[in-house]
Image (tube, rainbow, N blue to C red; front, side, top):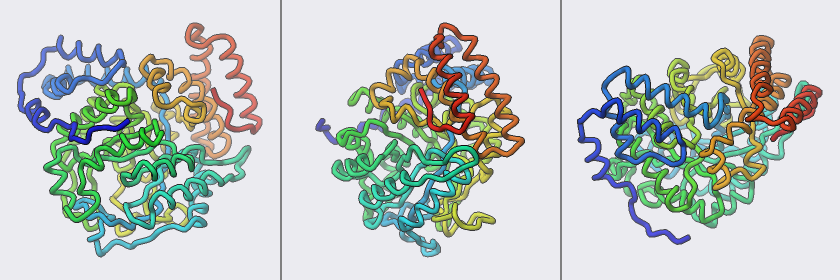
Length: 476
C-alpha cells in the first residue's frame, strides 16, 4: 500500500487541546472510561486530553482502577518478562540525550561477533531462564539488516539443558533504526518478532533540536513512517514508544495515541505494544535527567492503557522497583535481570558502567527476584510466545484483543510456561510462591465453565502433567 508521506501528528491540534483548562465532570470522565473498557478502538485525542485535565484525586483513583480493570480484561493477570540484548553501541547519530551518540568520546565502543552473541544467549536462556528478547543495536552500517538477520538466526539456534528440560529463546523482537522495505523483509525472513521503533518525541520542532541535521535520525518523517514500511514488508506486529522527559509528557501521550490511530486507520491493525520510558542519566548526555514525577508517570501509564486499550504496555528497568510496582497493574510486560552493556550477560558484573551502556538502569534485580515479587502481588509471570507462532498476529490478534478472547489464551499459556520456568530455574523461595499462585490460577480456570470448556480444561491438565515430567513448549 503506497502511503502519502505527510506528518499525521497534528501539532497545532495537540497544542490547542493542551491549552484547554476546563475540568471534565465526573460523568464525562466515566463516559470516556466506559468507551475505553469496550476496547473496540483507541480513544479520540480530545477524550484523552479531557482525562488529563482531571484535578480531583478521587476521579484519578477511578481512572487508575479502570486502567487496571481494562488490563485484566484484555490480558488477564499475567505479566510477560523479557531481556534487552544490546549487541553494539556503534552509532552514526548524535542524539543529545543518548550514551551511544557518535559525539560521546567517553563511550567504550563494541560490537558482538556471532560467537559472542551465542554466549550471551546461552546465559540468557540457560542460566537466567528468559524465553523472549529485544535485540538492540545503534544505527551504523556494520549493524544493518544483514547483521541483525544473522544474529536472529544465531540466537534461535541456541538450546541449553536445564534442570528438567531445556532453555531456548522462542521470540526475538528487534529495536533498531528505521529500515527500507527490502531490509525489513530480510529480518522478517530471519525470524523477527515485533519491530520496535520509538519516535522519541512526536513534537517535530523539539525533534529537530534534539537530532542534529547532519545525521540520519534527523529525518522526522522517515522515522515516523517506519512502521508503515514494516506493514508493506509483511510485518504485522509493530511497537511504538516515546522517550518521556524530552518535552511535555502530555504532548507525547497524545502523539502516541495519534500514531496508534493512524495505524488503525491505514492498516486496520494498531500497535501490539506501546512503551513509555523516562529519560535517565547517560554518559555524555547533553540533557538533564527527566523531571517527571512518580505521580505523573503513573498517570502516563494509566492514560496510555485507556487510550490504546488493546495494546500491550511495557514498563522497563530504567525505573526503580517502587515506580514499577505503581504502574504494573496497567502493564503487560517488563524486563528483568537487565544488563545493557555490550556483552554484559556473559561477563562479571559488579556495577553499572555508564561508558559502556546507553543509560543508567533503575532496577537491576534478577529475574528470580522479580518473579517472586510479582507472585506475591498476585501476577503470574508468562513466558508464552505461542500466539506469534500460531498466527495470532496482525488483524487476528487485534480481533481477539478487542473482543477480550485473547485473555483466555493468556491465562492458560501463562500457567504452562510458568510451570516450566519454576521447575527449570526458580529458587526454592520463588518456587514456593509460584506454586501457590499456579494452584490459585488452575482453580480459577476449573471454576469458569462458560469461559473454559470441558475439553480445554482437560487439555490444560494433560499438558500440565507432561510439563512437570520435563516436556517443554506445550501451548494453546
